[in-house]
Image 1 (cartoon, one colour):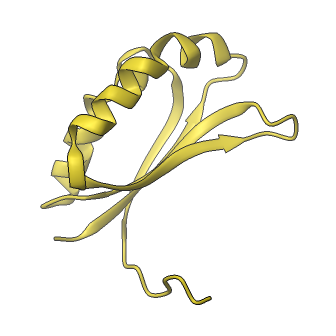
Image 2 (cartoon, rainbow, N blue to C red):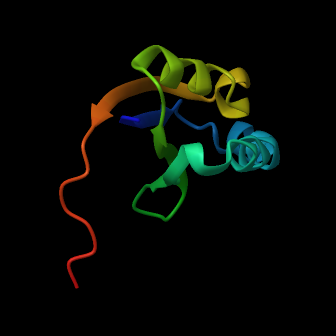
Length: 95
């Protein structure tokens, strides 16, 4: 199945919204099992979370959008922008 990158940027000054929905967000991502390949927060210059990057394996772009739309962060209105893009892994651990 294809991979998709979800690049989500938080609304300004919304760390409280993020923290209130964080536990539900992490539980949701965990419930997806192997669908989620990689994920974590974007950080600003003060190490504060300001967005999310998540790589998922999905049947289609529409399926990836469906996953994103059920994310508790998105349901809480945290994100200012959400971009979902097809992705092909070319480089892996090269060490």
